[in-house]
Length: 404
Image (cartoon, rainbow, N blue to C red; front, side, top):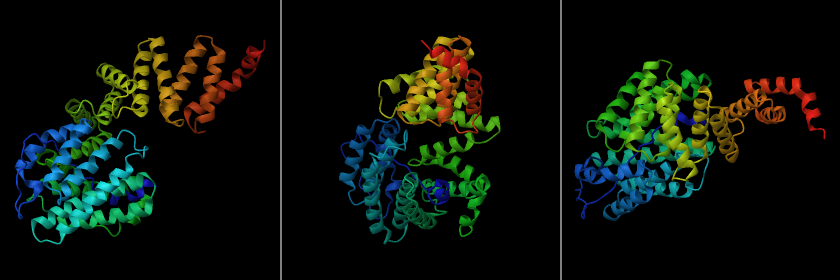
């Protein structure tokens, strides 16, 4: 269901800051804050702080920006985006929702006042209105509040159209165009049942959208990393290995640039696994597990589940059975803490531990692992079929082994 509103929630425009100077620059009544180079230079370290999950540092700078530009939507948008990135490693957690919506609503209120003006100020306001509504729509979609997601998405598109084609004023404006062009085609290709929803929207152009994202990566400041994030995901979904190698390169860049970002760390590990680069993966995944166990900011059981399975697979392929068992068990533990009982990582970890136990002639252990698989796996899943076959075959032996 959440894909139903993807097309109207694609304007997730990002920016962040960190300020070191004692005095922020004055911006006159004509110039857009988005294009003020002095502000951008002051903001550079804060961008890194937010994406590197140093949230206290980033937020202190965002509050400083607010003191200087309290009537501008920029600082409120930045503070809202900080809440967004706190959610990114695990979108199921709702503890940041209240602050996120409050900051985005304030962004909208401040931007609406500026929107009444003409010229570049109106366009800048449209940028923030599209971004704030777009982010709100996406989170409403994550929370399955479809009516609010629809309302927010329609508003995002309305304001995006105002700023459309204005990349000559700022490359930031190109980000929304790029996402629309790509997803307006991608959605009906992958979800044909949603085609009627798109009848009233303008046509997209996937290739153009990708080229526009590449331009944003090259030229933009506030939306640069978000464009890289989308390019990474777009490239990763393609079948051609050469295209997926582009996704791997972006994921590595993001991981190296923001080494404390749990989401980028996890995605890099996933790309290494999918591309079969296990030598690099081992160290990356091991660090991921260590940080989850040490409760680093943003490092949660979802990341641990991935990394644990990757390490278990590596050690299993090398014949290091005890190390493999250790990390299959950790994968199971992480999965159960977040109730990810249908996860392939969880089910395959259980099934593989059952296979190992059977080879070690530990029938009771193997049988009990397969019982867990049968309880949780969908009936069409390969592990379910494997479990049912084993349980039927060894039912009598298992009951006999339990007798005193």
